[in-house]
Length: 487
Image (cartoon, rainbow, N blue to C red; front, side, top):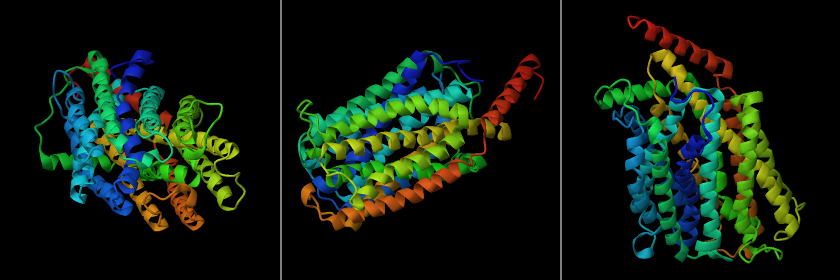
């Protein structure tokens, strides 16, 4: 089964992946700028903002599975997923603007910020869960599913990187530009427009292929049955293994990205690194998203051959260890005094080299984990006779949100624990503060990466098992088509 047999057309890969730009815009905002903006610019306590992010995640935990369940049971002539993709992006854009333009230009109260964050999360789920749930519907091919996720991650990352570059060069440019408030409103408005265009454009581009009346009409919505089916889906052994490993990986990534502006400004002082040979807008900080873009291109080339040779579980485990080692080395050398002078060209170039490869392998972990979920769909279908793409990908989406929820919450606690002062001058932060920030971050990263490698490496569905399961299912469907009397 699958709407497209064999290799997917390049046009379709690009259009499907384009919808993930909205996720990249959101992730870029949440992971790189939100905590920094509300704590260092608007003056809210970093620990409090981190806790609000965490509470929003907890609330969202009860909503996401319902969105997946409803998506699985949407019954229209446009299919199960497209109606969501046409409706949700417009209110999402309005709430995203509000997040970066709080009324009166001042930090809202804790409850107000919580309401805005919950709104963003729920509406983005209403876009992303149906979109990513299309993957196992579109193709059952083991490698083509990885290909779709490659394009989704490429598009998502490029969307986030584009917003980072614009933030550093257009909206909040110059030395200490991130500490000024004026550009954040424009950042929010532009991001909102990009989100809406990406989701709507991807839905329109896929309409001719996926807009089909579902084969069976679902039963009426029943809240008790909904949570029963969600619980049954989430109890699938393969999903539980994925969830533990994926949770650790996504939290680690979320913490790494949400703390990056603190480390880039206060440890590496990238905004004070200039390049005499480059354009005026180019400095160490504006070059950082370009470096991330290079790492994503490397990932795009690397992940397919890794999956073909090692499979998804082993690729995820090995990549998690490599990413950890490469991410920690620069900070270890910095603390023991073996690193070049910060703000020098050699320091910046060496740091960027580690970032390229650490992030490249880190994203391989993310793609491997997301692609594994598609195989769980057929395992669950074989056991129960039901497909539950929406339920499983709402679970996957919930796990991914921990990257911005738990990850940002941990960053908030790390910043509070290090006692970094609001608006501190990057050149005059005591070494004791930097050391506390680095060591706490390194310990948390190490624990999370090892957990991710251990559990994702033990994912129980191999390529061979998946292909055998698909063959059995297709044979059963063919037999039923030839003899409708078979049950």
